[in-house]
Each structure stands twice: as C-alpha cells, then as structure tokens.
Length: 134
Image (cartoon, rainbow, N blue to C red):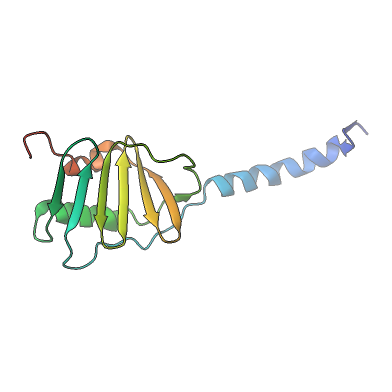
C-alpha cells in the first residue's frame, strides 16, 4: 500500500468525501440574526464622505429599511470579515441596530460579534442620497 508522509493513500481516499462534505457544511453555515428596528425610534443614516440624515418612523425610507431588515435576518456569516471595515458606504444606526453597507457587502455589528452578508447595492440604494439631499 502506498504511503505519503506516513498516511495511507487508501485512508485519504476513504475520508475525502467526508472531508469535502464537512467543508461544504462549514462554508455554507449561515446564521439568523435577531435584527430589528426599535419601535418609534428614528434611524440615523451616515453616508461616509457625504450626507447625514435621520429616517423618522413615519417616513417611506424608514419603512423601506424596516422591510429590508425583516427580509434579511437570515444568511449571515460570522468571522468572514477580518479587516477593519472600510471608511466608505452607508452606516445605519437605530437603537442596537448597527449596519454598514458598502459595495456588495453589509456588515452587522452586534453584541455577539460582527456578521457579514453579500447584498447587491440595488437593495440598499434607497439609503443613498445625492448631494441635493434627495
């Protein structure tokens, strides 16, 4: 039987499917986060390098944000963003909710840690205001 560095090639071949399945499961682990906008609390929106504004609970922007949060409680990955977040994008803060949107990524900063999710920029375009304030 052929051996590579003291390990039987047959043993490696037998365990390869199990190792591959474990790798897929670990890579595919996605968490559900208890994200929510606090009731009757305005959301602060900071466009890094740009505007800062408030979304009041009665506004259309707030309702869009509330809908986005409701639709995006699942699919978060932990520990996949190791660098300091870039100084770009859009920050949203409301109570314990702390999100940073940039490029095709959103980071959720929670008491349990930081989580990452891939999202197309079109999903958070409603948060971006141009220089005219719209």
